[in-house]
Length: 240
Image (cartoon, rainbow, N blue to C red; front, top):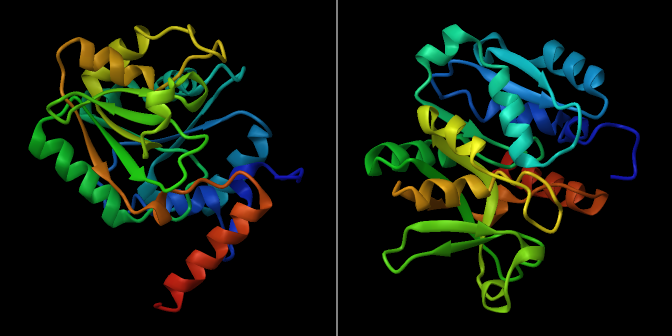
């Protein structure tokens, strides 16, 4: 981002990206919201504590080393108390840099997950240029069987235009054991959260999906993308 400010604290229309993500959860019956922090953890924690509404039930967990998205998810589970574990039925995993995601799309994800009785449901998008994104690989029945990262994809997989947005819904009881089944056999030698999908599918569980508008799921990784997110948010505010 070419800035000393932690990425989740960069603002879109006057509100930090992480708080846009928190506010997108307002319609959900939350048991807990665990925010995984790492770089400049104290700054992010202080900001969220100051701005988060009580209904969000915010808790924090610290990822000491950047060992991948799978490790971050495992760290996040440690932030769920025993009492909350007893109440939880699903886990919604979201990155902190998707300020344009709407509560309507999250509701669609939950509805599909529940009605289809999926073990996991992935939010996907279809892009004209999917360069850099993980690709959604399906079986002949249309079920998601794995997600392959761009750098690990074969030439045929690189032709797939349906991409992973980094937003998932998992059955709570299946999520922890599936996380324990992933490894680091990839180009980054990291724990990929995407590998949980393959673990569940190969165990006979159904992994479904919901296709979201690409405009809602774009991440923000540089100043240009931040400016694009600002323009998109302004269009919504102005009702265009």
